[in-house]
Amino acid sequence: MMHRGYLSAIGAALLAISLNSCKEQPEYVEKIYPIQEEVELKLAGKWEIATVDNVPVLTNEKQVVTYKEGWTAFRSASTPSKDQSWMEQVQMKCSIYGNDITEEGPFKLTTNVETITENQMTANVKDLSTTDTAQQKTRFIVYRKIDKDFSKDIVGYWEVKLALPGIPGVTDHRLSFREDGTFLSFDRDTINDEWVVNHITTNQYMVDGTWLALRKQSLNPTTDTHECWDISVEGDKMYWSALRVDSTGLRREDQLELTRITE
Image (cartoon, one colour):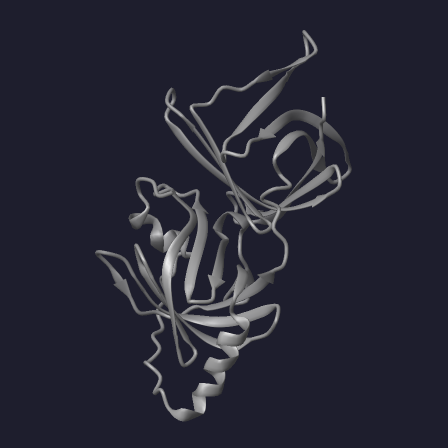
């Protein structure tokens, strides 16, 4: 699914790849062929961007990419900037040459793999181009392999508990995730002791592996809010965590605990 601002937000969605250093095109000689074989052997699967230039990525800026033999890539990202984008497993044609992986679709992306194991891949972004811009700049990225997918587990009705250090958890609202990719939010009416649905024009969500993105839109006033979390599901409990940065530039980790409601 692609929305307005998609192409203009590609740079932001791809972690604002705007650096100063350029890397020359490598010579494809026989000695790199073993690297290509290693990439082809271990690339298939779901990967999440973990760090950029050795700095942990903020959860709102993460991306998940799934490579399928053939080769095809599917990218997911949600950008909460002024040029919001919503990329839900956008399909890309994928090719491997040497240790370069090139993805082509609404934009073109080439990454140069340095190392790849069963659970980690390191690479440099060599080239990113959209329909009207082209960048040939390098940024060092570490991907981690995702071996779980909670897209089915999240469906249902959940009670949310806000967890803060040193403060008892407080139940402040409920969420209902539906199979069609939409969700409902409920606020507690303390006077009548009941839960009331919070009507917003559009409530969308997507889960790709262990990464969750929420999108809330309204018309009056006009808003388009994006929020991302790392999640895990254990029985009737779901745990959310997110690396955020405040207005002063200080990084913090937010956490939520949810309990499945069967009533």
